[in-house]
Amino acid sequence: MNTVAAGSAWHYRAVALSVVASAVAYLVFSLWAGWQPVSHAVLAVGVGGTVLALGMSLLNYGLRFLRWQTYLRLMEQPVPWRPSLAIYLAGFALTTTPGKAGEALRGVLLKSHGVPWAKSFAAFFSERLSDLCAVVLLTLFGLSLYPQAQPLIFLGLGLVAAGLLVLSQASLLRAVQGWLTRRPGALARLLRAPVQVVLEAQRCHRPAVLAGTTCLSVLAWSAEAVAFHWILLWMGADVPLAFAMFVYALAMLAGAISFMPGGLGGTEAVMVGLLVWKGMPGADAVAATVLIRLATLWFAVGLGAFMLMRLRRAQATV
Image (cartoon, rainbow, N blue to C red; front, side, top):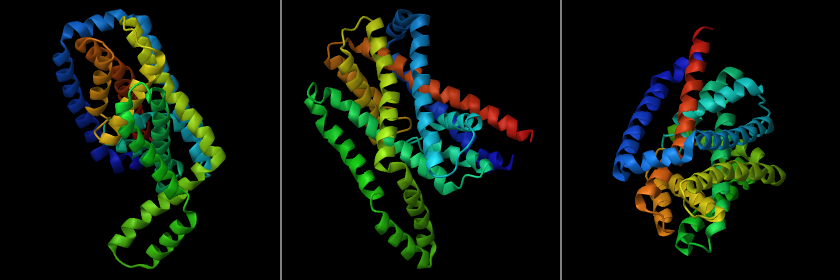
């Protein structure tokens, strides 16, 4: 109960505010496209298509959870899979915070399982870097199809390279940590935490581990990209799989780099713009974008909110 109470004051406000703000944004977005194209798209996809798209999203979450468990195990903080899965899914409730930073809520919930802050934040940092690496790799499908995207893709590659370069500097990081430990003052104390997080995250980025987790990440995000392709096909769009995967990955990359809550705005703009560039009518492009975001981002937020409320009720009775 204390674990939940420690963060409930802002966690639940953040959930409510992010959901309401994003729901309003999506209402405006749908009105801009017109209700008719969106309703036609829903009918074209149908119940069976919706179930398949949500199933691919669940596959995405499952593969990412497997990666999460791997990170916790590497940091010698194994958590039984049932409570760990509940905590992992609960983190999705705050996906619509800037840079998905709210997903660090998992660190609050993992405290009751004895996982130190530095290790849970190291796992969170490793996740974000692995996701960025995966979507950058997937954008390579369309590098020749849409050369105008090269600056954004190269920016993503640069961020991944910078992250891996920092993680490779073990001796330097330990020297900085030692220097900060000896320094007095609030600033030195403040800087110790991120340095400790990066040092812990190094365990998750050894070459063999990095290869395995990158494969999981690419498979996870490919699942949602394939669902996006299916939605486009069900709507009658003639879009090759490689281009659909490129559009989805580039949109995710744009959303991540924009640092907007859940990538809102940047992700949708890239998706709609590229689909229109490919020859899809504007209203249909917006409708397809709304559907895939409902089946991925909003499905995750809804599932996360449900699991977060379950955890809250369960711990309140302890």
